[in-house]
Image (cartoon, rainbow, N blue to C red; front, side, top):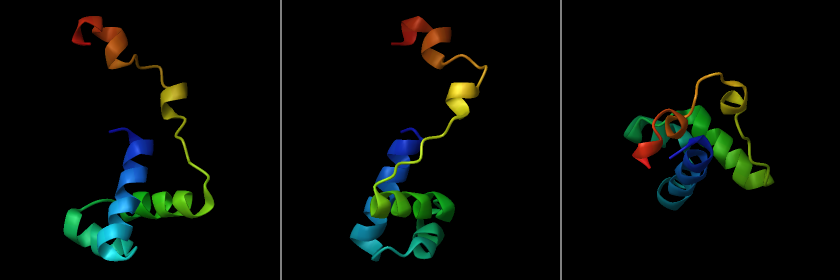
Length: 70
């Protein structure tokens, strides 16, 4: 699960089971509160934050290093 998928999943579970309380979820599951709050903001505004680390990283993806893994 990559960052965007995780930031979509975590707020869904936060709303569904914990009424949007990120601090409680952080305590119970150990998920980063910042990630949950970012996901909650993305759901509220409709703007999805995508990290640029993979775009600017010089490291090759796992699929490029080991094509037989697929």
